Image (cartoon, rainbow, N blue to C red; front, side, top):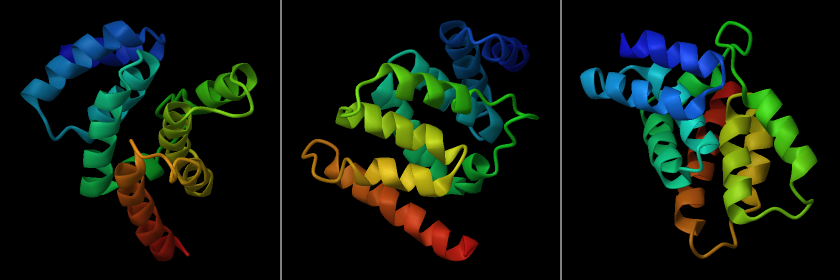
Length: 146
């Protein structure tokens, strides 16, 4: 029940409500990758960046293709619209947190664009270690894709 309701909230872009239901589903089935990748987006949309980063890093280390192979139509992925809104609302010079959020979202759409946003954060003392790990993973996958 939690997953169905969480998916319904996700489809209607009610991210706070979706978080509650999807988290309940993850407690029952922690390996449900479909729920995990939606929960990352929900965390990003509800200003829970640290939770999103933690879950994102865990998922890409376990199975990065779960995110890379997202079918935007079948999965009703909101990432392209969120990215569009962020790029039209935020200033040209974004904070490290905004660049990380865009890096995460872009991985659902385009690994090369994702890579660019994570590279923008490399000089940051707070996120540099995390971003280096993510970039290393993206480089490994990019070699396999090319």
